[in-house]
Image (cartoon, rainbow, N blue to C red; front, side, top):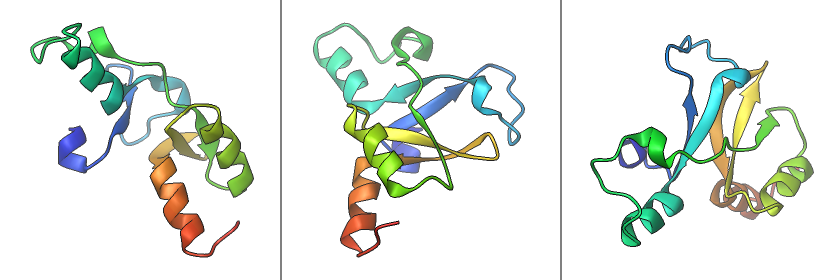
Length: 109
């Protein structure tokens, strides 16, 4: 799925969560490309393993109306990406690369 959607991080929700009405509390973890690659390279994982075995902690969350400075603070704490919430629902993922592209475009808020 990471390759299909061209992303390097993805939230994981509880089984049976009500898509498309998933709420933030239903996010139980994440898939992080960098961590999966490291686990495969060090032989701590195999391609046949179930996803749950290599699930990472949930991505930090930011509201869609929060200022860029809040996102900078979240991403500056070691997270490579954050889940974006709109009215308490996860609707997307914003990465450091996304933030850099936004700032390079001249926007500040």
